[in-house]
Length: 336
Figure 1: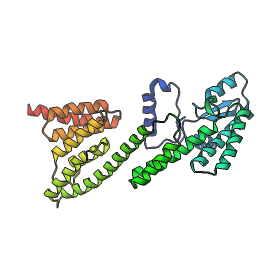
Figure 2: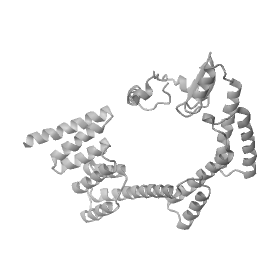
Figure 3: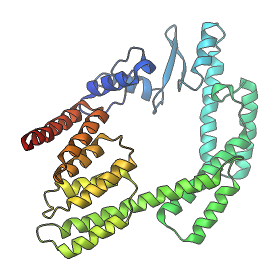
Figure 4: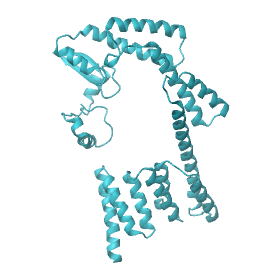
């Protein structure tokens, strides 16, 4: 049952999604009503805010609710074997809510004595119910506490790195995160990923600011000398994010406010976007083809526009890409 769907053409969006899923979704899929009957009377009424969510109904009664990968198979086996204990299932569900609250409290730095007291209560409840975690996994309070503390420490560390805080502060937060990292954690690899992501984010912000200045310099009352300097700075940024590269290249090629178009710069940035996205993004391939066509390289533009069409999985966008391809092909035919 499709719920919480957004957008204007919901039916088409869902149909495309189901078709794309293929054998992974080889069952009937229904749409919620316009007055969101299912979302209100099932999901919200059951305090289910995330999807997917499964409801197991037996003889008109809901006997189990949860993530389909979080105990549904076990519940089905017990129900069909006549061994399902509804009261125990209710207690297990309530216990899971306590576990989630326990995790949040640990992440927020709750009182250690209170956490340890609740940990013992949850471990006892785990024994009583024969397991409260999905998949029959034993509740391990020490493991969950460490996981929560590590998550909290990593959030603080990542926030500091992205904000570009003082090196000493970042080093202090890194040490705190390392100290509570679960056994076997490759923290050096995590650190590298965080630093790369922060660098990319910073680079994208710098690029956006530079491009605003560049756009003004190549506008109606622009400054060619200043524009050349800003173009040099854009090149030297060595932007890695394909979407940022694509947005700047497309802006240079199409923004009506730009009166002096630097086609070589747009082509260079668009090619970098293609490389960064491994040539798999239809919109980025289209931008590069546009730059090639503007450069007079029609044959190359046709080649990349064909790749854009092949990579596109949106019917409306694909029609636009095909129309552009025809324009390039007509231009090549006239030249011959």
